[in-house]
Image (cartoon, rainbow, N blue to C red; front, top):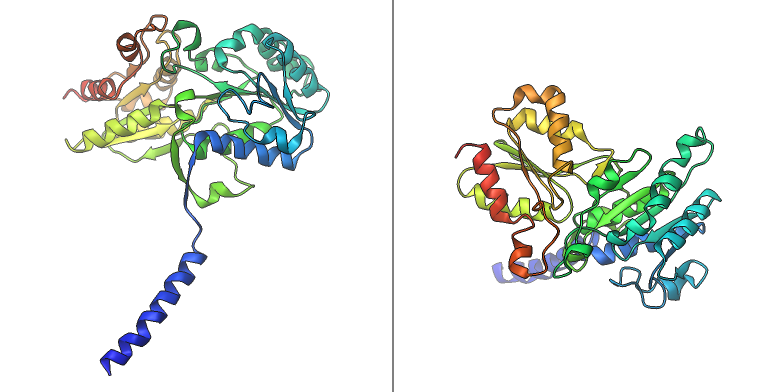
Length: 356
């Protein structure tokens, strides 16, 4: 009788397993590159006013293959290869936004956006204010930002503080695939100019892509940070690639009984100061981490805002910044490694703050 019962149960259990597997949302892995591509594809499909332009974005599928397949799907009118003239095609994009379209303007690297900074700041960022709210400029400037590998001083700058300084712009900085898709879609739908600072070294990194992010309606609100890891001893705030370094440091320090709360900023401007303040008021310690230079940086702004706000009285030690070195990026690998924050630097700063 027991044998008969087992023979009945096993097929039934297998059938139930298959049924539940089909009912559960599929969890997949996706690279940051593919997440941005998917986000742009969905918005191009959703709104015919959206188009992409930049150097090599069409027939070559993008210098980093972020726009792979979009030219074949949408054609020359919506995926546009431009000459090597950032000032020229950024100006075309800003004019198109003023005329009612929704351009995505790709810079092959944000270092080249310096060629077009007059269009980004004077034409895009200031027009809504100067027109008394009559003329919006719904445009996205996107591309890789910050240090890559072996590309030296002229291709390695972080522009988070540069663009975060300017009223009229919104500035977002994704870390993982979920960030990338949700922020690019929100940026495209926003009626203000948005600068999206990606990271070349993260394009090929795959992350678990939650079921909700797979929806065409998935958005991440601009101006809202995310607590990636809960902790009680110290608050660690970062954006872009250094978020991963902070999580690695937190895992190491957990073995020593130190619980780090890691905050992924996601947005540089407007900055989610409330989330940082609430965390600092819980942990009583603060470390900021960024790849950019120290003077007038994102970490400096966070420290100033904490000092000026209610969380200052909760600090048990001075806040500490971990930043890139205050030098143009060297070409030699050993010097490059010592010019950008490493996990060991974050661990050292956390222990220094906690006086361990």
